[in-house]
Length: 370
Image (tube, rainbow, N blue to C red):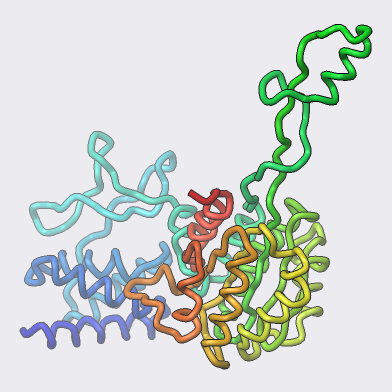
């Protein structure tokens, strides 16, 4: 069988799985083809495990996969799945030890078991591919995130046992002692957190990720209401900071949805960004702030205009972070015109397609410039 024939067989099997209800996405199919290419495809158990580990995303997919494998490959019975994991080590088993008879055996307590808990698997799942139950769990976990920027030295001082001399306090202390020299009073600068500005693309191409990203913005606004600003970008600019100050995340998103007139519409990043800079950023909101843009970079207008606005923003902000949901997917390259125009003016370009990516974003926001 040639490599082309093999790929055709595997793609047909993935299509069978999709018809049976398993989310065999393009990325998973590519991973399966790569896994099969690295194994001995003449052994049925190798082909079985290559597909099982790449095409199945949750425990409910396993029985469907077993039945589809047996039906698609000429009625051969697939290798027996591993034995159930004990309650104290319950999780999603990823690998099992090969059995000399061609089957599989559960990994014993004295062996190294490679397993992932449901929570860990969920953290890596693409937000656009979650089931209803998984989406509810991700919403709960996103609400626990605490985005916060690093502190910067402020202009005010506070008493300190170390640091520079505090002339006013030192003179007042001398006056209390009739002008006699006494111990020098010292002071240090009081740190002040930087402002965090979130700009969220709510156009149609970002629809699968809009809910999770707005909930991330809600978590940031709730943590520091006076130092966090949130805006949505689409065909126009909308400030949603006040709406996201609601304590309840669902109520906050309903209020934000009522305030956004261009929800799931077109994309005019350059015009929206110019409106932000003219009305808010230039007047102080973006000055010295950490600005985070959530967008896939699709731009209906002239990319040169977007590049000009990004240059303005980079001169005002302390750091500019761009979050693109496609950044974390295999084979992605920033070839979209808007993304390519903005890339030279970014301090960080990160993914935003999963809960783990949003957790990494929290760490990126909290970093200072090197």
